[in-house]
Amino acid sequence: MGSKGDIELDFHGYTVEDALSMAESVISEIRMNKDVATCYFITGHGKIRAALFELLLNSYKLDPVIPMGNSGVVTVYVY
Image (tube, rainbow, N blue to C red):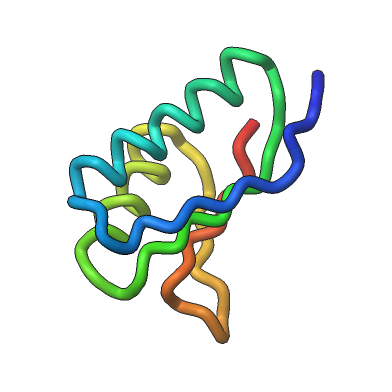
């Protein structure tokens, strides 16, 4: 199994649909290549953060975290 390391994506200015599509593409690529990565999705505090958190938790069975001190980021370890 390889490691992609850290991936950071900034979703400011994206629609909810576009942000979720981009996140799904990144997760699919990581899993398809049997890689692992820590992803930092910069979402701000609005609808994208809530929708992304739900997607990661429910659809991908991952454990997203909103770190203390920066609640505009969703961090998730993808494997």
